[in-house]
Length: 160
Image (cartoon, rainbow, N blue to C red):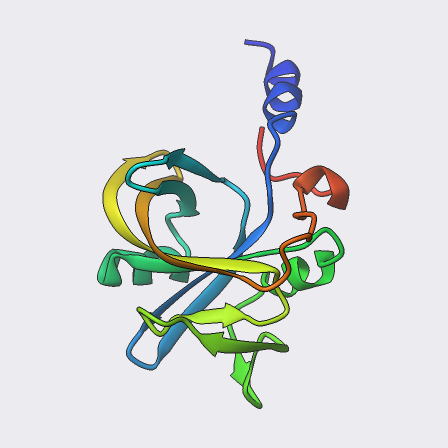
């Protein structure tokens, strides 16, 4: 296989950017993810790829749940703030205001236009990421007309 062609073609897949959060007791993990997609209408299922050596992965394995805050097109700065370890300080998560989700009490960024919670229904291990299939159990919209942030808009690459 032509490795450069593989990298370029896989980078042409459209990826949104999201903040994935998990909580186990007082322990929180949050990070920017982009390998996320809806997989079913009924029941409402999504799938997300999570790096195996991440704190997110560790806590999802323990709790079998997660929450997602959807980033808007002008929120690249928020995405970059979650490339670093999770810090809760002054009522903020990595410098951003949050509230706890209704069902699981997981952090949701209040600046983001939409969010959802999901419980893991299937786990697909493979390579350096695990794919979690989650059934959406609750969702909310703060700004219905927001345009989602996509990887292409940032100039960043995570794939290939």
